[in-house]
Amino acid sequence: MTRFVDLRDMPYGEVLDLQHEIFGHRVEMRRKGLPVGDDCLITVTHKPVYTLGRHADPRNVVNRSWLAERGAEVVEIDRGGDVTFHGPGQIVVYPIIDLQARGMGIKCYVSLLEEAVIRTLACYGVESGRVDGATGVWLGCGTPAERKICAIGLRCSRFITMHGLALNVTTDLSWFSAINPCGFTDKGVTTLCRELGDGCPSLEEVAATLRRHLTELLKL
Image (cartoon, rainbow, N blue to C red; front, side, top):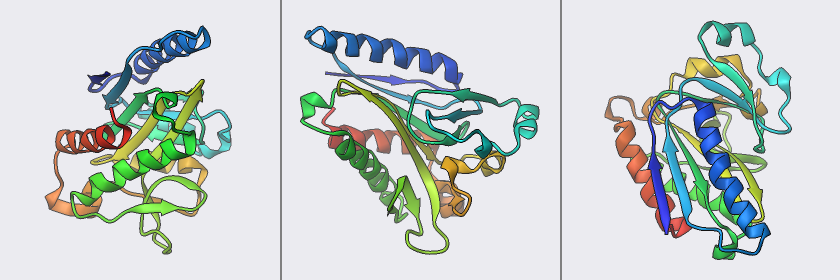
């Protein structure tokens, strides 16, 4: 069974605490050799926040005074990856799932998260793909106009996952000017609505489409 949790405009710290509570319990059950319980898929939009992964370079936050003036905090967290932004207009999904029950490793899991986003974007006529050495989903792959539309950062312990993906739909891209997104200085960032113009679907519609593809691919 999978529990679906849909949140809106939730402060990052509150959702992080919720993730840790669910994740920690499931990991402890696995450590004890007991059933780990149901999977959980959290979908959320956050108030503006910048998160730095375990091995992030603090220098990739290039304008701390600017982001502080706009009311955004910087939080160091326990996922992989460098620095990224979460905020309004962005769909963030945190799957807290058991990879062992699926016979799946972390590389396969990342690939399926990317595939769910690629299929979601294709539903709206946007072609996307992967870039070697750069986790996430990109547009203009292999061209000078490569631009990231979805970031992925994870933690996994005893085959239980937490953290997840962030898909830019109507996100204000000026927020990314304060950082080198995911540590890159030579690649752009985009949103679904920037690519589509006036034909952009609602955040709620895209969230539903993404959840449908995640459910199918991850067998939730």
